[in-house]
Every structure is written in structure tokens, then in C-alpha cells.
Image 1 (spheres, one colour):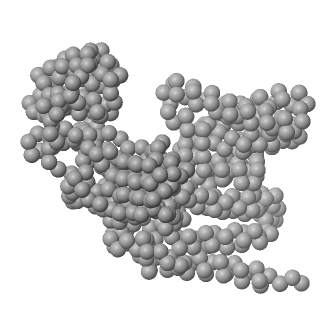
Image 2 (cartoon, helix red, strand yellow):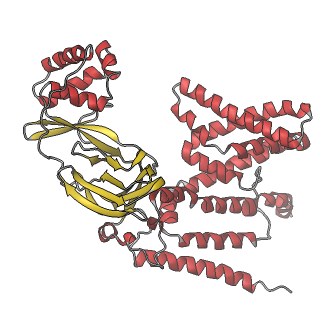
Length: 504
């Protein structure tokens, strides 16, 4: 007889190793079990890309420092083969890379950790910029003067003038529309304030949003009134420091100054790390060692990717439990997990409506294809094209109706939806609509349960911060796979026997 001891030893080893890794992360690196007291650490990675021409290269990138609302915790850079220096000059802090010769596509990385700190102070209140009038061609000069005249009547100083001027620029009037063709909102506002002899400078800020990749900088205008200053967003007219706005360059200098290259661009990836106060201050995640298995040691773009990937085993565990123990039938084994991942992007209600619309419409169209006697590959290809067309159509309709949530159905896995429609259509022909409803409803039920598990804040915290949890999930899946008893949905077969025993 085959011994089950090796199996249980493997399961026990997986469980104990996973638990040991989690305990080590908690007690040695002080990572909390639950999201509790913490400091928000925003890790921002700037990626500089350009084409080198084979000549000496010198790249100078503006970098942020401690400023009102943020404290700089740590900074580093990755530049294989390049010399690197952090310099402080009149144009603020900059990272400078240099190399004797380079050719072809080049990538340079700069990473900074900024702690959200309401008591932080920094060098943002630098000296006022000089007022240097600029000659403006007609008819733009007249349009500027007319808007300035209207705004000046309703203002008392430079800051209130800026506020009223932004109202005029966003009012949609004829002069505002003309000036919108002249310059972007940020440089336009600075030029008009300079024309009104109000000291102002153009800053570059980064709107922080967890998990965002390849984000550009936005224009921000700093307006002075004597020793006092205020911050304005020229795009929407808001006044004051916006929440989670990190000022990246605040000395009116170029963000990137490049010599020896062309076609340059700078993009930003950001990730919010919610760490306990002592862990954030000690910066233990910036000192990796072989036993500190942490995703925080990866580049930010990969961290943002893994934040979603590590939730998949939780969804798989939910599918295994509901199929093996409960006995829920689904259309496809792990299709509900992919649908649950789409629900995380779209929200549950929007995802359910989108799934039902696409699958329902797809079944109607697929029923017509069944009469054409196509080969399997051609039929599936046609279904895939129809799914893409339906997603595009529903997105356009949702946008036209003002339902912006409806446009998120593009997150659905198109190939999986196409195979789901194909399976359900064949099942309808062979087993009838009752079986289709049973398996389709089971798939949705499992997808919703997986979504509730994967979207839980505690689960998201544990999966990202404790990689040992993956081993415990593996042990649980192996144990469930060894179950050979009755499923809960099968127990209804014994109900007549129970009723008979009661009568006896």
C-alpha cells in the first residue's frame, strides 16, 4: 500500500517554512500582521530614456528634496557604466550621470523614498524670481490685457489676482480659447503674471497615485506676494498644495539637461508603502540580505506588478475550496480567478454587468455562427473578434451616456471571455440551457467569492509583505487536493433517507 507520509511531510514542511518566514518578517523587520499604525512612504522611480550618438554623454536630472509635506528618506540611482554624482547648485539638487562614450538606447534610473510628513519643511520658499517682461505678438497681447483688466478689478494682491485670472482662463470665453492655442496653461499663467508684474515661477510636480507607471510631471505655478507665496494648479484652477502632490523641480530649471543624446524622455513609476513608523524611519527595506525576502528590493515597476500577481493564489485557493469541498460547477477551471482580477480593476457591480452583457450578447452571436459549420479555429477567432468589438462598443456607449465606470470593462481578459462563450454555446447545444445557467452562475459565484477574498485590505497587506504566505497557501491547496469525501452540494441526495429515518 502506498504510504501517504511523504505527502503529509511535504505539506507540513511548506506550512512550517511559510510560517517561519512570516514570523521572521514580523519580529525581525517589524512588519505588522494587520494594517495599523504606519507611515506612508512614497517610492518614486524616475526613468530617463534617450538615444546616445556615440559621443560623451552628460545627463543632469532635477531631483526632489525635503519640502513642505514630505521628508526625503533615501535616494539611489542605477546607471551601469556611468559615473554618478548628486550635486547641489543654484538650480537645486540634481543627479548627474556621465560617460566617455555611449551609443544606442540608454536607460538611467533614479529612485527616491519620500515620507508623507505634515510637519516637514523644506527650501521651497526660495527667493522671488526676477520679473522679466516678454514681448507678446498680437492678437495674444490684447487678449492677455483684457483678461488681466477683468481679473485685476476683482483682486487685491498678486495671489488673489492669480485666482481671478484662472477663473477667466477656465471660463471658456473667446479670449481664453484664443490664449489656450498660444501656450500650455502653466507657461501661459506665468507669462500673464509677469506681464502684470507679479513674481511667479513654473514648477514641476508629480501627482502621487499608488501603483501608477510611466506618469509625466504636471505644471504647478508658485505665486509670490511679498514674503508670502501660494501654489496654483493652472490645469484646474485649484489653489494651495494638493494632497499627494510631490514637487519635483522648483527652481524653474529644466527637468532633464542632456548632452550627447537625443529623443530623451523622463517617466515616473510610483508606489505607496505603508510601513510601521519604526520600520520606515530605520529604512530596513533598503538593506537587503539573503534572508530578507522582500518585494521592496525590486524596481518599483515590478513591485506594482507583483502587488496584483500575488493575489492570484488567494483566488486559486477560493476556487479549489468551492469546487472540491462545496462542489460548485464552473465554466473552465480557473476562469473565475481571471474574472475576479478584472473585478478588482472595474469594481464588482460594473464587472458583473459588463460580464453579463458581453457573455449574453456573445451567446446570441455565437448561436448564429453554429449554423455556418465553421472549423473550430476559425469559429474561435470569430468569437474573439466579436468580443473585442463588443467591449469597444459598450465602452463607447458608456462614455456617451456619461458612465465612466462602464469603460473599465476593457480590463476583462478577452481570450478567456471568448472561450467561455464557446464552451457555454457548446454546452447549450449538448446539455441545454439549464446546465449553462448552472455553470455560468457557478462561475460568477466563484468569481465574486474570489474577488471578495482578493480585494480584502488585510489579504492584500499579507500577500505583499509576507511572501511566506504563498507556501502556506500551497500547503492548503495540496491538502484540499487530497480530499476524496462528499461535496456539500451532494449531501442533498441523502435528504430522503434522513426524512425516512425521522418517520421511523
